[in-house]
Amino acid sequence: MILEIATFDIKKQSQTAFINAFEEAKLVVSKSKGFLGLEFQHCIEIPTKFVVLIQWETLEDHTIGFRESPLFTQWRAILSPHFQNPPVAEHFQTINKI
Image (cartoon, rainbow, N blue to C red):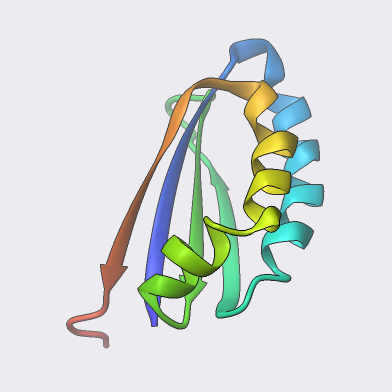
């Protein structure tokens, strides 16, 4: 399992709209091959910052399967009007778990 951590910097006036748009966007990404689940979080200290933790079966399920599909285009179209800056996505694998 691969964990994608995507950080979003959202326009100050778009926070509520972004949260609402994410309801639609999560349905889009959930259709992608290899998608296992996600968690959507809002930063307490920086109200314009959001983080999405997405679990994928493999790195390629995200970087190729999703990112090179029409689903990604749809996902971006739903969310990008609210971006202050482009999101940053990083991938992690578990080394140790208790």
